[in-house]
Length: 253
Image 1 (cartoon, one colour):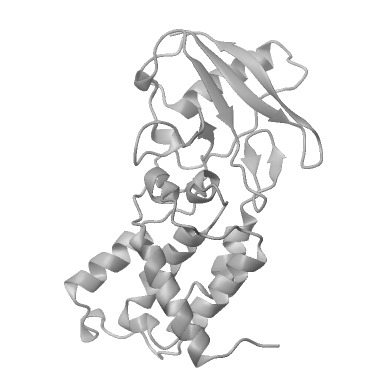
Image 2: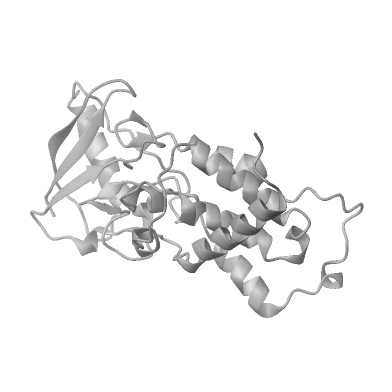
C-alpha cells in the first residue's frame, strides 16, 4: 500500500507546530501503525529531511506499557476498539488513504516534540497515594486473607489500566477521572487497601485536580477509547469514595 500521512511536527514545548504531509510507500497489511512510522522515519533519515525523523513514544510494542498513544484520524489509538497504537495493524486501511496523526491534546500533557507528550502528571497522581503502605511485618501467606471472586475480578479489571492517557485525550474536558478511578479501584476494593482507602482517595483526587485536568461530565468518550476497556462505572466508585473521604476529613485551610 501507498499512504499519505499528515503528521503533527513540533520542535519543542514552546515552538509552534504544524501538520506536514508525507508519502509512505511499501506499507504491508501485516505492519503495525508504529512500524509504518518506522518506515517513514527511515525514508526521512535517508533523504536528510530538514525536520529529521518523527519523534513518537514507544516501548514494549505489545499493548502493555501504554507509551504508544497518538490520535489517529481524531481517535485515540485509532479506529480499532480496545487496541493500542502499537497493536493497530495496517490491514484496517486501504491503498491511497490519507491518515491524520497527532499527539494527545490536553493542557496537562504538554507536547515535548512532534507526537511525544509529557505524561508526568499521571506519575504524580500515582505518587500521591497509589500504593499500600500499611506495615504488615513479614509477608503473610496469601491464602490467609480471603478475597471474594467478584472483588478480585473488579480489582483485576481496574488494574488493567496501562496509563496511556487515551481517556484524557478523548475527553472533551480533558478529564483524568477514568485513569484515577482505575488506579484507586484496584486498591480500594481489596482488603489490603482498606486502612488507607479514604486517605488514598482524597490524596489522589486532589493531586489530579492540581494537575489541571478538566472535570468529568459523563460524556463516556474515555470508556469508548480505553484500550483495556476500563468501565465508566469505575468513576462512580471514585466519586462515592471521595464524598465519604470528604465527610471523614474536612478540607484543610
